[in-house]
Length: 77
Image (cartoon, rainbow, N blue to C red; front, side):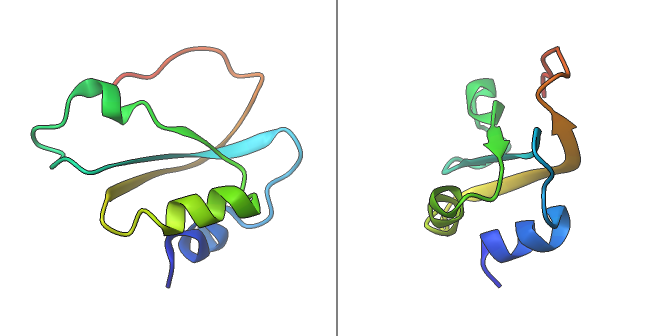
């Protein structure tokens, strides 16, 4: 199963205006700087799926809730 296959199973068909949240980086999570945890929106677009599938050697993390662009704020990990 690829990363994009997994996300497709988790998120299903995302409605217009919604997205998942993904984060991937090469460092070990224990020593990774906080800046690498920022992540990005994931809408399941073909270019995004290809990018996340090519990150096979990265540590990849997913936030499973589906959020809308109307939600304001910033999360810190």
